[in-house]
Length: 71
Image 1 (cartoon, rainbow, N blue to C red):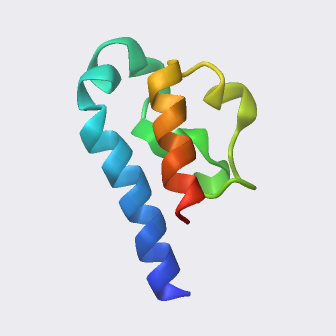
Image 2 (cartoon, helix red, strand yellow):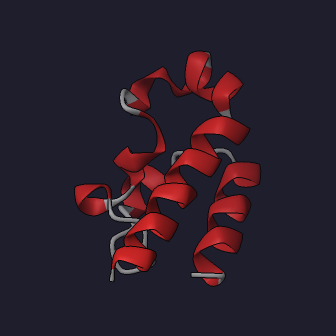
């Protein structure tokens, strides 16, 4: 379980790092970064907030899909 939680944090850190420019510019509405696209900040397909996810640019959605597919 601990290993999985570390992996989950890496998903959020990966997104925050890769799309830092987006978060500072158009993505300010996400406030605390990409953890806000997941219920309780727990990255998984089941916890994905679909309405928030769909507001992201296609490129970022595709990357989220890739990361969650590897989960």
